[in-house]
Amino acid sequence: MVAAGAPPPPPAPTGGAALAAATRRSLSLTDLPEPRGGALAPRAGALRPPPSPPSLEPEDAAGGLPLPEPYKIKMVESITLRPRAERQVLLAAAGYNVFGLRSDEVFIDLLTDSGTSAMSDAQWAGMVGTPQAYAGASSFYTLESVVRDLFGFAHVLPVHQGRAAENVLFSCLVSPDSGAVVPNNWHFDTTEANVLRCGGQPVNLTVPEAFDTALAAPFKGNMDIAALEALLSDKGAGSVPVIMLTATNNSAGGQPVSMDNVRQVSAIARRAGIPLFIDAARFAENAWFIQRWEPGYEGRPLREIVREFFSYADGCTFSGKKEALANVGGLLCCNDAALHETLRNLSIVVEGYPTYGGLACRDLMAMARGLMEATEQRYQDHRHAQIELLAGLLRERGVPIVEPPGGHAVYIDAARFLPHIPAHQFPAQALTAAVYAASGVRGVEIGSSCFGHTNPETGEFVPSRLELMRLALPRRVYTSDHLRYVAAAIVALHGQRDSIVGLRRVYATKLLSHFTAQFQPLDDAPAA
Image 1 (cartoon, helix red, strand yellow):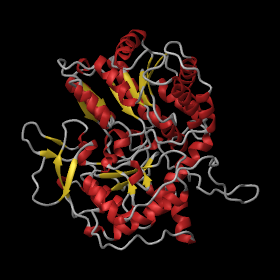
Image 2 (cartoon, rainbow, N blue to C red):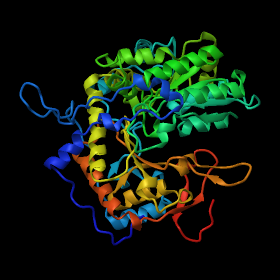
Image 3 (cartoon, one colour):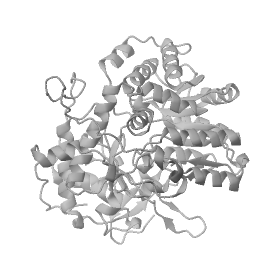
Image 4 (cartoon, helix red, strand yellow):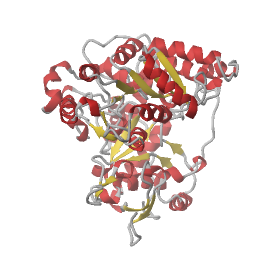
């Protein structure tokens, strides 16, 4: 946290050449070195530097006019910046864990992009007009039609959110007595927890480039193909009930997965007779990166790219709280009829009848409409331009971020931001707490509180390989001025970073501990 007497953040820059360069900067050829060795080396020639992404204020070709957001505001929600002294008291009461803060205690909330989108008038209108029914809801058939057309899977089960889909899938496929291993490019928190809860071993096989946060290389979310083949050779296909592939790769900084990578993973899975499931929470943002970066996809409609990407998989788990632009909901999809029957039968027990899946029927309609809106080109262009605006403002002032910026968030490398705080003192958690204390902005820790674990043989704490603070942008919620405030606050904090101290964790659960963990600024309190 920051000392109580620290000066307030300076005003955000509003113009000038430096700001223009920051907001419009895109990757250049020199930013994209050839991937280093390993599984990516044979495919390096298939990758090319991305063209400049559209600026947040692109010039209209006809009139030279700046273009604003592709929507207008119809309803507003008041937010309040509480005094610094009050924020420090609230933070201490929450155990220096921002999950413990009430939403009305937060000024700008970048904790997550999950369930926090602003829905469109078309979504609301569809919800109002949706009849409620326990079985055979018309909105289910609308959603099923959209999903089949967009994703291409034969069978669609609605669930109340993405982790519910993971619960059903792994409960059916992972046996605690089988020594099951579940490889993924990188499991996010609930995926990992659900594999562990079912008695499986989650294994992360991210490409090495992902761990160099300053390296602006494309598709750093890819699975390491050589590592996957080595795992299957070592464990045997019979020990692997399912292969997962997360797009985009949230744990690695929102980094995308290439079409070439999913194609290769699919080929390996099919040769081994193992189903491949996509964790598809941010599928459309991933498609946008493929459209911009991968040869042969420039100019291809996003929905065509999405359909091809899913064609290499046998099914998917999906949180509708992200790119269905809904506040609740999720999907579990597959092609195999026998597997669908197994999944459906458990879903009835834990989620509800298959045509409502634990949701009000209106929520199914919101997801159906949201899936179409999330795959509109102008929506995705603006979404990524907002990310680049925030990333550019931070990058220009020397704040270390994960490069290239991901599709749903800007990630700050807390290990580089706070080099004086070792991993066992939770630098990403300390930074997250300090940002809230200084500005009222709530980000989230993606580091050793989230992914650290205790070695069962030695009892030693094993920290996460990355210490990140994620600033996730809710969709269609905040304006450019909100993001400029966030950037100015973090830049000011970066100048005071030596005043931030490490944390001691005093309470933690076995699974998903970061949600409820408690911390204290470094003192003599006993560690959990």
